[in-house]
Image (cartoon, rainbow, N blue to C red; front, side, top):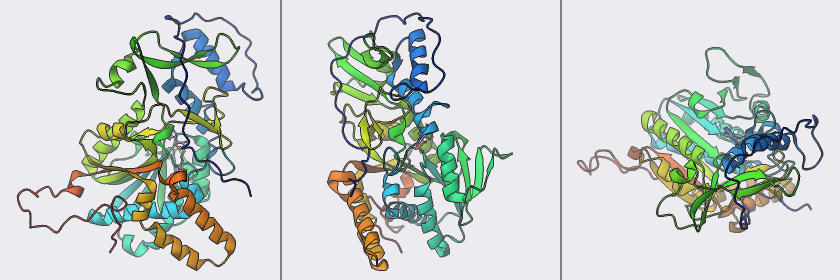
Length: 443
Ligand code: SAH
């Protein structure tokens, strides 16, 4: 049988010594006559666009390069390709087994109960990929219909890729959607197979305010990072430039002096020599934290990452293999580990935070073992049995996704501590523990 597809968590090798970029931007070479059509192999339309830009204005930050490679409106990887799944470039947990999305769905229902069963909630997913995770959660909501019958549930998907939003619409609504509806900040609307309203947005800021549960699975790792390196002369930013030795090839260089980003993002107490910072992740966490503080709800973030300890994690994936990040931009997925310590800092105390906790612990607490047994008992063919066990192993095995994937949550302070605890200690029943971060207790 073919070997299992690779997930994206494998480590990357640190860059060797980098040359320094010329101090000033080079003048445009004026070279015209770029070929019109997409060349084979390494030569891509996006590479040609970047070469023109670099010739005109000099090196760009890794963040700008990553943003272009992933979400350039015409040529970005997610915009055009977005190859998630076995036949694509990388595989994610919801694409491996239905159990993953079901347990996440139960997490939200359990938090909804713990927060006193509010009359309505929006489920907001950032970067929903193929829509599989939402679909699995909607199935759980439908199975728990008697519990949720009085609650007005709506789905809100934040997705920049027109191609992936089309795939999501097909999966979730059978393709029956309305584009650019009037009187709405959404760019697309539809109704799920189970009758739940779904809206699509390009930015979290377009999602209407209101009591919301937020979900980001393998979303933050796709946001652009800045890279910094400590040198004898202090911190310098890693930039992307044209290699003068090889025609049409990109290379990493160091900024000749400190860039504005170096001043802002490197903490004086930093001990590492290489640091990656994702300011966009910080901005989004700030938004989520303020929204939760104002309107209530919770956010669940799941991704591979670290707690402010790793150094070089920027890497590319194409066809389930590691791919050089600077080669053929737009044709490979680029990713960097999520720094959970940075996310925690960016919540700025507006909400409480929980985690990061390892995926295998989170899923165990959510009852994955019981769920697996039920599914095994309900199916009688060996192929399904094998698939279920394989999926469980991929998610839980510490050598596969069990240890390197983490769960992290933002919750209103009052979810963890009674606001009046200091005064009337005995007056209230104890708050229920947060499922996943401790054992699930659902009544
Ligand atoms: N959550 C899915 C997909 C992960 S891939 C899964 O686990 O299978 C990353 C997703 O984020 C894709 O849907 C991609 O198009 C989307 N995305 C990437 N950058 C984005 C941005 N800046 N804003 C909104 N969505 C983005």
